[in-house]
Length: 322
Ligand SMILES: C=C1C[C@]23C[C@@]1(O)CC[C@H]2[C@@]12CC[C@H](O)[C@@](C)(C(=O)O1)[C@H]2[C@@H]3C(=O)O
Ligand SMILES: O=C(O)CCC(=O)C(=O)O
Ligand SMILES: [Fe+2]
Image 1 (cartoon, rainbow, N blue to C red):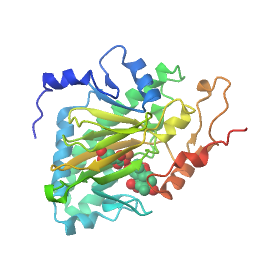
Image 2 (tube, rainbow, N blue to C red):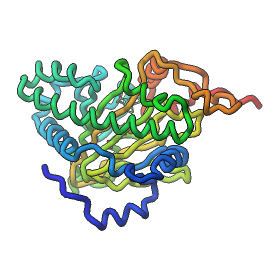
Image 3 (cartoon, helix red, strand yellow):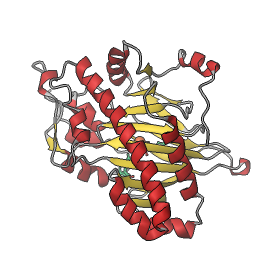
Image 4 (tube, protein in one colour):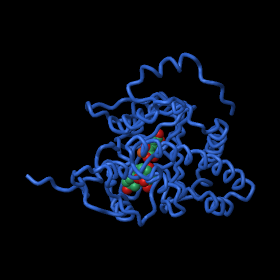
């Protein structure tokens, strides 16, 4: 798969996007990031520094995997929580027009699981490509979190990024495949139901097929035009709490309505299980925390007992005194 440079027309349309678009090579990107996290909780980044060939190679591997006969793919499932899943999302009855691989970000342990199912040569290639991609995406996510910390004057500068860098970081990686919808199948179906991501930050890349939508505070879903060269970033619930509600974890979903299949890959940067998720003291400025204190382990446990669309943070919000 070869990527060509971005056409001039696309560069032009970026300036008229209804959601923030941030060029990480620009000097004002730090303040833009903070504004985007506060106002929308979602933005697109360009000049991100992730080599295009890492993105293309992982997409090729994903296509190879999803093209296998179902009986082969099922050998890598069911997700427990990691592995291959088909239509069932989580364990509480959510369904979507999607098949996926849910993986740990520890590429070495993925290698062992894959080698035992698909043989060493296939596992070797997947491991290599995945490792390159994850290393580059995690670096970009940390860079964004450090810029955000600087913009918010959080000390130390790595207060957020160190949670992703920690060896015990509970990060997850997911590759979703939304099969093409043939014309006769008609209409929109839900590919991935509406939800917020529970972790700190999510970094999404897709092929050039549409489907992703975000919920705007004006009360409408807007469709995000796909862009295979760029990344889309979501503020997660944990970052919303760490900023005491200043940043918003955005509701999003995928509508499967395309005659072409959609492939997306998302890195969910999470903290270690024992990490306390609470507003950072320097952001409190005399305010009270909006949330009861909890660890990532406690939140994750509650997340995995919930349905996709549930307001998971609601359970941890302090009841405002009247
Ligand atoms: C229905 C579910 C799937 C999910 C766990 C949950 O019980 C509720 C949150 C879901 C979600 C959404 C973002 C990520 O895709 C995900 C991996 C996560 O951390 O929370 C999924 C979970 C999953 O697919 O297991
Ligand atoms: O597949 C996509 O584009 C988004 C999926 C998503 O939001 C998720 O996996 O959490
Ligand atoms: Fe999501």
